[in-house]
Length: 91
Image 1: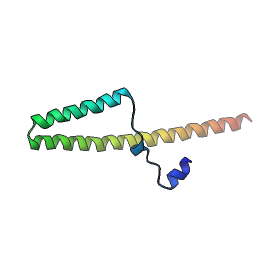
Image 2: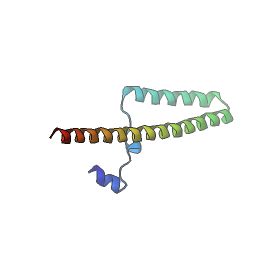
Image 3: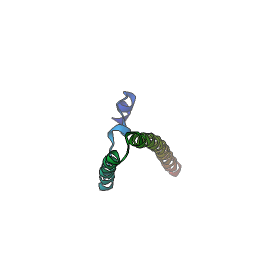
Image 4: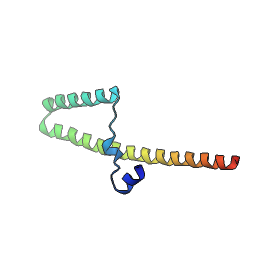
């Protein structure tokens, strides 16, 4: 049950849910290929900057994803509440 998993600290959607679309897979492969090219073309210092840029961008994307998740979850709860109230008012 999801509530039990949440309570027990076993619910980690950000760590267990990985997109499976062909677009996602292609983007990941392209990023890896581009990083390989950059590692061969750039100086160690410049490549380190690119790696840091990627790391900071990943942090920003995770924060954005968390915000979207929270907003979507809240919106879903509001929709559920409104549907429940609508059904109660019909009776």
